[in-house]
Length: 294
Image (cartoon, rainbow, N blue to C red; front, side, top):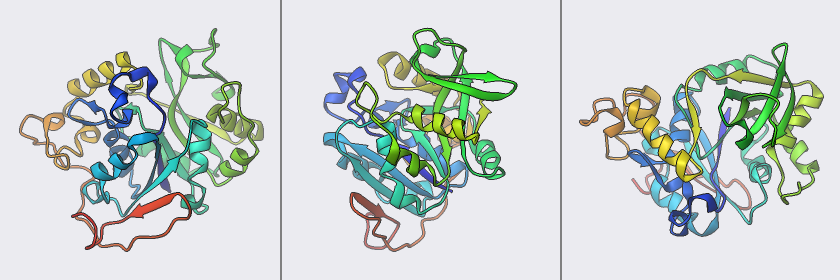
């Protein structure tokens, strides 16, 4: 399984901060927002990740993340999304990268308290298709909302004004290779975007959509209020192995204790030496090599 982190968008709900940087590079407690989905993937055993971004600050991701060896990654790749075509369009840029393998996809502004490793195992034990992660929330109108009957998702509606349930579809998805067939056939929504909800509903029509219910907290960080909330949640959960796993890599340690006692205890492995690969148009991969930034 490979990982894809979607980190594009204009971040208009976080203005004026996003005039000078991509929202996924803003800090959540002691490190940039983009660190959290990477930490989740590494903790779940995924070592080959593609970051899809866009806008005027795409190069800052390379400056920050470099070749990914601080996270223990074998390969860290980048793709650039032009314009605002939606989440599904951004995911479509990962087709060459995926190479027919299943994908774990995380929206870059989503932060999860618990490890996603159990969800990875559950999906891997199934027969492909898609799997979404659900969480009960107090404000489901902000998200895609799933209607669940007899332990099955029967409908998903994107940001409904009158939600049918309190089950929010989080920004974490599992897909097999057929996801790109679906994306190629999608038509833009009224917003002019290719919607990830339409992708999930297609799997639902095929009878191959599963779901996994989250127990720990989950939050996005795409608004001023949710960014503040995310910082508070991470700060209050400083002993969490997943949230603290990269403290050493960033040079900090607050999430794992003031002295960094939890920093690096999960997910950090000695960097290897891998040759860079060409992933096709619009993609650049940097793996740990002697010629890249140490």
